[in-house]
Length: 458
Image (cartoon, rainbow, N blue to C red; front, side, top):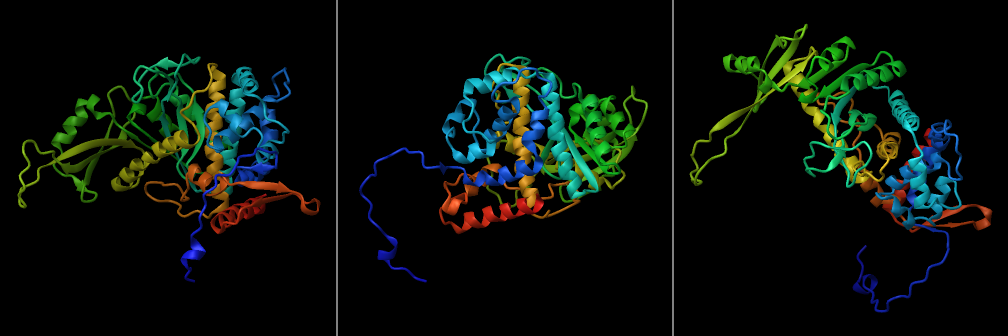
């Protein structure tokens, strides 16, 4: 229907006066879907058990503080001081089950009282939520990616150290090792470390624990693992074979002159596509006891031209090769192995998304245990944002060569903008609690879709 200009345009000149009153208005009406998710998971009750060993019992329990951290990060805030900006929001108070939120000093003091057992209990709880979702989805195989990520600190946080830091050279940092699940794009577990350790520090024990925890809860699943060249050593690679995990790992072949010679002597490369070609052989370093399958790949790319550019249509283009070596125990074709290994780049996307949307890279405290809990809260906030989408939407894919996530996930920031950060008002017409929002068909469609899915899953 065509509208006239008088039906569209209006003149507004007067600037309204601002008045602040307690009218039961919320700025986060859409957080209701997370309230349903937390109720379904029994999150508050399970968090409380994580701190049952602590003798002191403050008014605001430690489980309340950790739950507030998770909600804080889901809302998009990063610093503890920013709780002041939603302190009176009725929707947040209802989600928390409180009449008032704790002060920043109370939150800091509560975090400083946490110990190693508290951290381990939260890690266990975080893993249990991921495993529960994987059991529901019944994947025949699970792909686990392992890599570290630098978390920079601005001060002298306990347990931090100066190490490799690409973005902030010379800054103190932590360097936790993460395990992520490719099919769901979630964090499975974390091994916390100072910033001055090698990628493989503590990796073999951490990986073994991750495999054991998955297999104990989901026996019979095919487990796959992907790693970069930092994990190529005689502790990690033989472990994969011993645990019957199908793996691929990059090989830092510059350290092995024999590998370079094998590449130079090879005259029969098999084409994978227009750019990639490969050959393979059985090999092992001298100090190892077992030979493994090594897939040698080369990628054709244009050689950068030096000197002035000649604008000649028929000027020949020089090409060079970029080489990469992959070690594996997988029995698929070389093409399938290369595609599978190249899919590990999805883990970098998980790190980037979590750092941008749930403050994974933020270090808020000076105490080590407090910083570990904050990082775990960030991981759980990210995982819950994936969980609601997994419940509400059908999987779009299952097994593909690169093992992409089985859903087309929206980033948490997108979900915030679409329907979480929406104004609403609590009223009681006829004694029935009602949350009233402005009429917007797109918001209504998305919000009701998630609410219906959560209520069905409950």
